[in-house]
Length: 325
Image 1 (tube, one colour):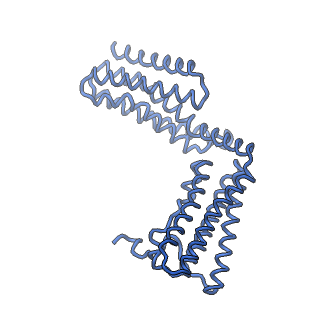
Image 2 (cartoon, rainbow, N blue to C red; image 1 turned 90 degrees about the vertical axis):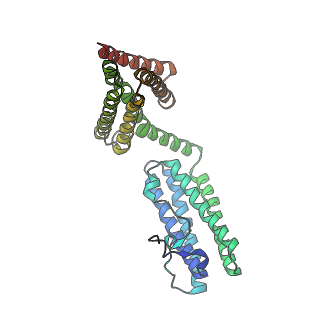
Image 3 (cartoon, rainbow, N blue to C red; image 1 turned 30 degrees about the horizontal axis):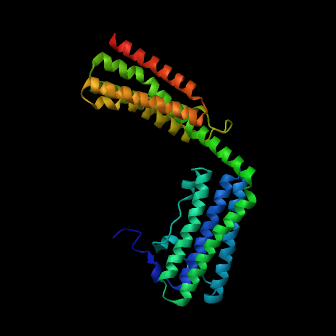
């Protein structure tokens, strides 16, 4: 028997009072989530924070109405029952998991929250046999649908065209500074700087396994170094570049990927086949770097390709000449 699941109640076994208590606790939790989102967004996205403040107020109002209904039907003592006590009940993702994923992710999560609740109540109402229970669940489904309408109304009030455009521009800029810029630097460093040692060893030994080991060591070592360097160079508070841990992760992972791209082909035992595949991978890597520069950094195609191809060609030539000598 799986621990934690055996003690859960089935929704069909809940009484009308317990269903009402579950709805009350769910509204309380959602209000807290919306307030947490508002606090997270307020410094950089005040208009969106106002939307979530309004949604939290709406959740509290529905909670108050549900409590009034409970008092009228069952008295003052509300049973302690929460989502995690009911098998199959919709769950909420932890706030910390969502709030670190950006403005649009938070907006999408809020929409999902309202739709999940609405669908669950509608499905539960369709399976209820008791007329009073069916009516109660239908009312809750209608309330959740009303939440979506209210959210749209609040967004229209607080997020006019200029405010939304400003916030989206700020969110895009933050994404570029926190993830794209360090990731691009890592990809360039991993793809270009490891060309010389990998191809120098390749042409010097013509041993594919030795070349792979050197490439693996160079890629992982460069990734670790680049990651720590990026994380330690700037805490992001003054520059506004975001969390140093996120930037370090982006730089470190992309550096390692950039180096491994042309090291992995040397798992092929035939030297010239492995080298040919590695050269094709290098071309793909350099094209990807140029594409990222053009898309996210607004670097003109011609200049991006020239910089990347020239740099890559010089480093490759250096490695090949040193290895051949």
